Image 1 (tube, one colour):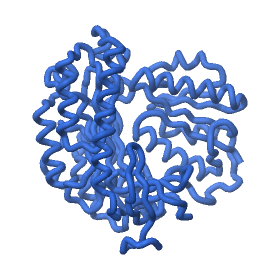
Image 2 (cartoon, rainbow, N blue to C red; image 1 turned 45 degrees about the vertical axis):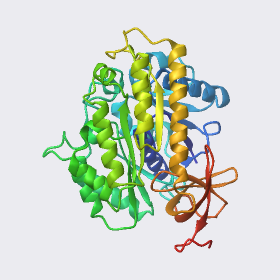
Image 3 (spheres, one colour; image 1 turned 90 degrees about the horizontal axis):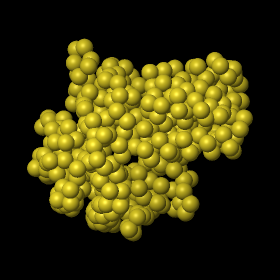
Image 4 (cartoon, rainbow, N blue to C red; image 1 turned 30 degrees about the vertical axis):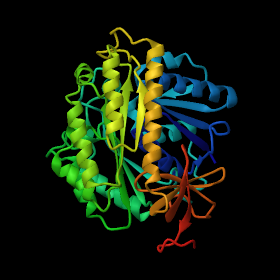
Length: 423
């Protein structure tokens, strides 16, 4: 049986694409391997959001070439789109697939490698404990730091009816959580004819039968109108976990980034989210070291992180990307960027610890995500990753978990029944 492995870098959209590919390969009788060292075909789904993402993708390709020289390596994703000529110099790469051809990647690989009818259509079609659904691709925004619109193209959305059918099928297969992914999720539906919206799609998903929840990937704070906020915070289906692409706390830097946002608008948005969903886990992206960032600008970001009702922050050091508006601007000193990023990450750790402490002694819903050294990881609706003793439950199974303790970087608990008692 032909074996394959998918190595993802970057965003939830890449993960959603890989989720679909894994299902298609397995339907054709291919076997999903545990890693890329002992399989025939290795798909590397790259990211190019930062220079580090580029390095990570190239490093992994070299590792596969070294450890599995007989593998057929397929490279796709945003680095493959931005720098295909650079990747062609790598020995061992079998195919470079542009983003526009990603949908047909499994079919092309099977056709060129040879069909394997043994086991085709049999057994579980699995890749992750949660189902990931790409509902939108591309971006029409023009943030000065971001290369993604140039490699993903303009915003395109999948039709509502098509998505509802896919989600219904995933629920019928037993998935308790569906993650909706998009490069710019809040733009969903604008390109459809007739136009639709994320609000409309979520309202339709709400009507589907079954016991499941929806989780959303990153949300743009500029495109969260009141009715959408009301649905996000009041839905019985949508996980109370909202990740916002805030990027900075200085109005001056936000203008330079090409983002129509202000420090005050962020405060008002987060206050409304926290007021309407007090236990929600609100996360945010912040960029440190954007060209021209002064100490005063940075302090505005640090103050915003401290004051907002956040459960965590993802901190990125600015990385100049070829072809972007900010790429030619004078860079902030590397040592300064490193120190500022470190400070924000420490502030984020304190926020996250304080948020998790609120749930000690509480019993929450969750699903089994993966097995780890020392037990099993459970993911709660509000994005707490809880380590519990081995349960024997399958990955993806819904459970109830009691939070027993939290450390600086860990949360532990135990599986309970509906009454909060150990089974």
